[in-house]
Amino acid sequence: MEIKVSLAESFVNANREQFDAFEELLLFYNKKFNLTAITEHEEVFYKHFVDSVAGADLFPEHARVAEVGSGAGFPSIPLMIVRRDLQFLLIESTGKKCEFLRTAVRELDLAACVLQMRAEEAARGMFREDRDVCCARAVARLNTLSEYCLPLVKQGGKMIAYKGAREELKEAENAIRLLGGGEAKTYHYELPKGYGARSLVEIKKIRRTPLQYPRGNGKEVTSPIV
Image (cartoon, rainbow, N blue to C red; front, side, top):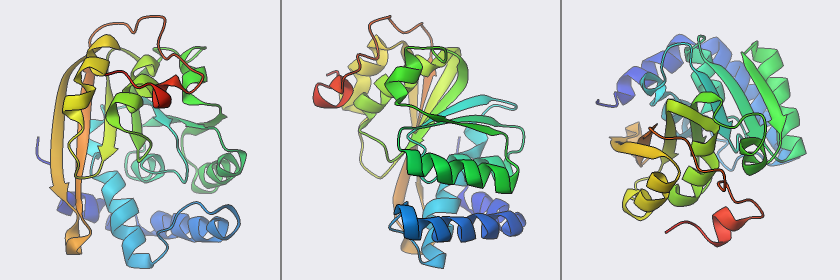
């Protein structure tokens, strides 16, 4: 499937009232909570909004989605603005970021629940293999990210990772296999006006994740599966 960035840009423009309201909230709370280093209007538009919406067609209709490390709400909030059929569980461990996310969800009338918890804790509890999709943007390298995300996805679902231009799939192949992942596809695209190369990695969940994963206690980062 081709990622049509021009279509993503048109989706953002078609919902400018809500995106403008979100940008206003983002910049206001950024002064208190340091949510993002990107604050100039055009950069926010392309690097945050258009980039988030670029993957919209990868999400099945009416999908129940978990987002790991929601932070300032990318890609989840732009996705919910243009895809009102999606329902999100926003998993974020930092209290101040959760406060911002709850405010944005309420003010923009979005179908989302904010969970203040570490992703590995959520995946070992009631949300294990509970979601159609798990997504994340700018959280960790793909082998670590797979251990956070795939345990949250039910068999037959998928993981979607928003990445930069770097190719990380090769080093993550063993982790994906061990965690129940199957076929992986990478979609490359360029943001307009020279704002950089991006990629989306889509990984199907074909088997249940073994009970020992995620390992917790920071091992996903300090000792990633190789």
